[in-house]
Image 1 (tube, helix red, strand yellow):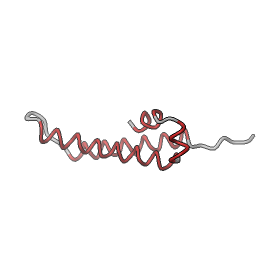
Image 2 (cartoon, one colour):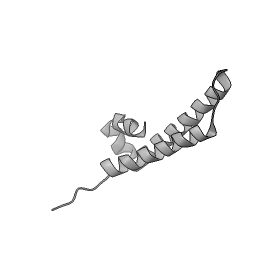
Image 3 (cartoon, rainbow, N blue to C red):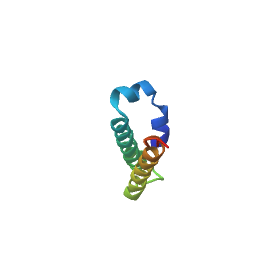
Length: 80
């Protein structure tokens, strides 16, 4: 979700906000989204339950996605 979120942002927004700050906002949104989904599963459904470990797994996935975006898009090209 982090990678798709980063790719969905127009370049004009990226220039105004900054790459790093934009990426952290996307990660924060993704982590909060994962937590909210687990709370809704626990509260709104009878046959499912929210699991804190699922929220932790979602958060870990968001951080791994952030690292992938940094590796793929934030590198400075070498001058060879």
